[in-house]
Image (cartoon, rainbow, N blue to C red; front, side, top):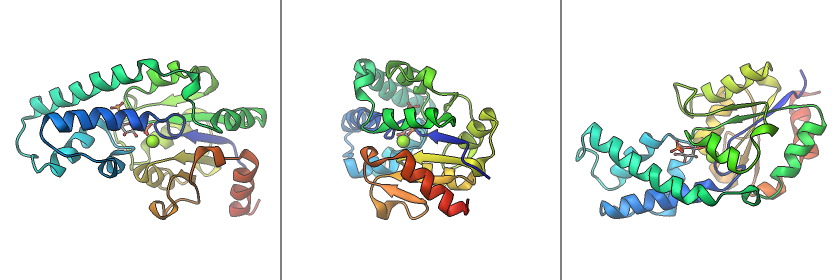
Length: 224
Ligand code: B16
Ligand code: MG
C-alpha cells in the first residue's frame, strides 16, 4: 500500500464555480417565484443538474407543476445562464493553494485525476488552463450514477491504473465525500468540519491544503 494518486472534485475545490451555479439557480428560482438561499444551495453541491432542479422545485413546493419536457427546458435555461457567467473564468480563478498542491503532487511522481458531477467540467478546466496537468478527467457525461455513488471516483482510479485504497479524494460536497468513502479512498473535505462526519480530514479553505501534511496523515492512517 502506498499513495499513488489524488483525485479532485472541480466545482468548489479547484475553482469557485459553486458561486456561479448558485447565481444561475437563484435567478431561475426567482423567475418561478421560489425563494432560494445560499443555505439551500449547500444541498445542491456535487449533485446533478436535474437533481438540483428537483430540489429547488421541492423547496418551492412546485414538484408536480411541470412536465419532464418543461423541466428539461428549465434546466437548460439555468445552464445557458451558467455558461454566460463562466465565460470570464481564467487561471486567476484557481482557488488559493491549489496550484501549489498540484505542482507538489506531480513533483512527487503521483497521478492526478478529476472527478466532477458537472457536464461543463472540460470547458471549465480548459478556461483554467489545467486540462493538460491532469492524467484523467471524468465528468458527468462519462458516468451513469452521480455522487454520492462512487462511480465517478472509481472510474478515475481505474483509468489512472491505481487501486482506490491508494487514492486521496478531495471534495467540498457532502455527497462527494460520501462518494469518496464508498469508493474506499481517503477523503479530504473542504468546508465546515461539522458538515463532514465521514471525511478523514477537513480543512476550512483550500489555502490550508498542504501536500506534506495530507500525505503524512494518509500514511499515518494506513500505518505506512
Ligand atoms: P452541470 P462538481 C457539480 O460539480 C456541482 O458541485 C453541482 O453543484 C452541479 O449541479 C453539478 O456539478 C452539475 O453541473 O450543470 O455543470 O452539469 O462539484 O462535482 O465538480
Ligand atoms: Mg464540488
